[in-house]
Structure formats: C-alpha cells, structure tokens
Length: 141
Image 1 (spheres, rainbow, N blue to C red):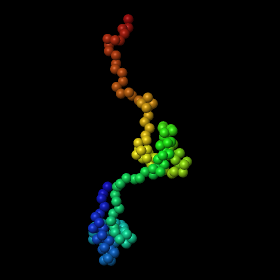
Image 2 (cartoon, rainbow, N blue to C red):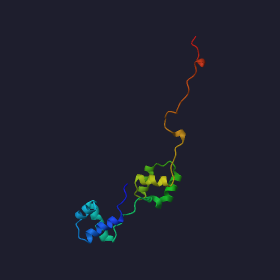
Image 3 (tube, rainbow, N blue to C red):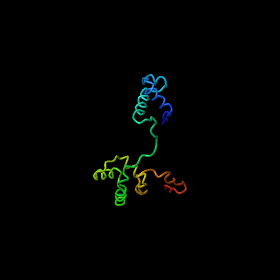
Image 4 (cartoon, helix red, strand yellow):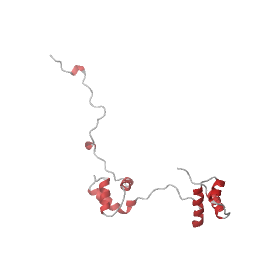
C-alpha cells in the first residue's frame, strides 16, 4: 500500500486554494497532484482546520467480544459445531455477523475444532506397503 502525501504538501495545496483563491484544477497542476486530492484536502481544511491523513493500518476490533462468554459456553457444550451453524445460532439470538467475523473471532480466541486423525478422509497413506520379495512368493507347482 502506498503512503499518504506529507502534511506540508497537503497544507500548501489547501492554502493555495483557500487563501490564495486558486482553483482546484490550477492547484492540482501546480503541485502535480490529482484534482480530487486537492478538493478533499481543501474540504478537510475547511471542516477540521487540518488536512492531515487518517491513521493507516491497525487491527480491526472483534465484533463478537460482547458474545464471548456465550460462544465459549456453546462450544463447550457442542465442540464440533461448525462456523456456519454458530453463525445461524447467533443470528437467532439477534446478533448479525458475517461468516468471516465468526471465523476471525474463533481464530483470535484459539477456539478451533481439530478432527481426530481416525476421522480423516480416505486418502493415500504416503508410501504404502512395500512389495514382497521374490524369495517369499509361493511357487506354482
């Protein structure tokens, strides 16, 4: 992701539009930025008194933190509950969340259900059994 333009440039562009009376197109051409950026910076300067960029990055808060105790109790009662089933139960409780939000919450809380190896799908077991040697084969006579 690209980083935002510096505050100095933003302030200079906004000052050119608001104080010097320059048009947004003229300021964009002079400072070599887009017209839409000039418009946004001038609006921010008018509204807030500053045209500093918003903070970037960070972590999203988990929506289901208020339902944490219920989710833990529900998974303790039925540990093999699927994410879709859990989402449907939350919807029945009046909590509207997406599949991804439930998944992210379970991952953050380390509440995942691992299937036992005995229940895994049929698949090749790796190398398999080795072929018998010729000395151990029965003779046909």
